[in-house]
Length: 157
Ligand code: SF4
Image 1 (cartoon, protein in one colour):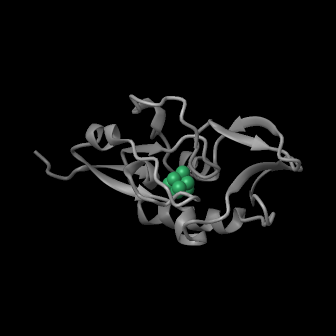
Image 2: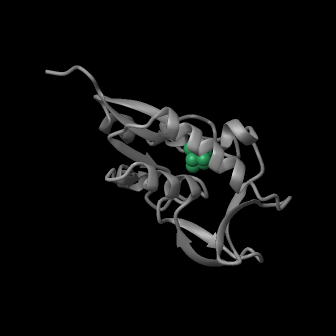
């Protein structure tokens, strides 16, 4: 029998890393339990680029395109984030599972609020990392953290 463990990418903040914009974590203990037996690959594209704590970012629809823009200073950080995420994907070309944080402009999978330029919510979609991973890891289902949560199901990002 092969001893090579299956690999799972997991958003680092739900594993217990304090990598959120506010310096906090959103640890879900059930996740580490559920993924026993897997090689867990923590993933957070924002912290290495922007530091922690950092200015919040939002997912915006601008002229029909999805952009990631900082909340106060209005910097478009889409390109740097894409580069960071693509480098991560290149380092981990083969994975078996992906579990991502809900509602995040980077990690959210179908759960992230999409804003217009006046910061009004105009819809819900996937964050930039979830979108790129969906393309890169063909056939791998992206799971949302909420599926593992047995407490505070309404907790926000
Ligand atoms: S949601 Fe994703 S980008 Fe945001 S802190 Fe968690 S791991 Fe990092």
